[in-house]
Length: 281
Ligand code: ADP
Ligand code: MG
Image (tube, rainbow, N blue to C red; front, side, top):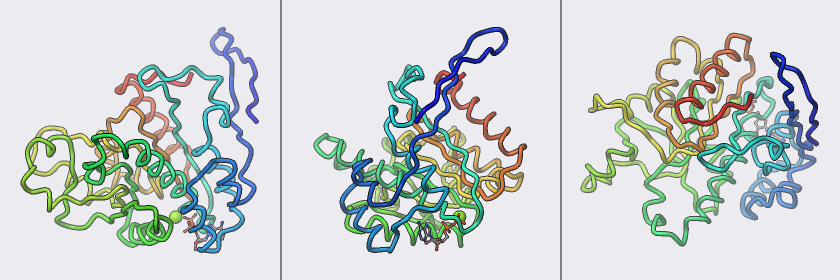
C-alpha cells in the first residue's frame, strides 16, 4: 500500500508518496495479480520457481504493477507520454536472484508491446527493432543472462540475442540507409551485451550521435561496475542513445555505495531534463 504524507521542503508543503506495493507472495500470483502471459507463468513453473526471493518480491510488483498498485497514481503524469516513469535502484546480495527480478518484468513488458502492435503496420519490422537492452560488465555474465532469458521466453515468440563481434543493430539512421543489408543486423526483442561491445556498434562508422529510440527497457546489471571508471563512458553513451521518452532504466547491484547512488540519481535527473520529463520532486 502506498503511504502519503505532507512534508515541508524549502518552506513548501509537498506531498510525499512512499512507494511500497504489496510484496509478491508467490510466482503463481504473477498471473492472477499482474496478468502475466500464460506461457511465461508456465515456464517459471517448469523451471521450478515457486517462491520469490526478497529482491524479487519487492522489485517485481514495483516494475510490473500499474500506477495505482505502485502508488504512482498520486503523482502527476509525465507530460509527454501520459505514463509514469519508473527508475529503480535495487541493491541485493550476490545469489539473491536479481536476474529473475529484472527478467520477468522486461519479458512481460515485451510481450505486452508485441501484442499491442501485432495488428499494426509495425508488426513486420518489430523483430528488427530491439526493445530491451540488458548490460552486464563481462561476457560470462552476459552469457548467463542470455541462457536464463532463453529459458524464460520459450514458446512466447520473443527472441533473445547476445551481442557478438560483427553484429549490427538497427538504429535510426539504419532505417534509411541499409535496407539492402538487413541480414547483417541482429533481429531480436531483447539484446544482452557488455557496454564495450554495444557502445562500439552505436558509435561505429559515424561521427553523429546515433540513437536507438526503440529501446523501452534498459537494465544495468552489476551497475556499480558498469558505472565505475572502466565502463562508465560506454555505459553512459548507450544510455544517452536510448531516447525513447517512456524508457525504463533499472540498476541492479550487490553493492551500491553512496557515490554510485548519487551518480545514478544525477544521471537520471539529467536524462529527464534532456527528455523534458518532469522530475519527481
Ligand atoms: P544475483 O544476480 O542476485 O547474484 P542470480 O540471479 O544469479 O543472483 O541467482 C542465483 C541463483 O538463484 C540462480 O541459480 C537462480 O536460478 C536461483 N534463483 C533465483 N531466484 C530463485 C527463486 N525464486 N527460487 C529458487 N531459486 C532461485
Ligand atoms: Mg547477478
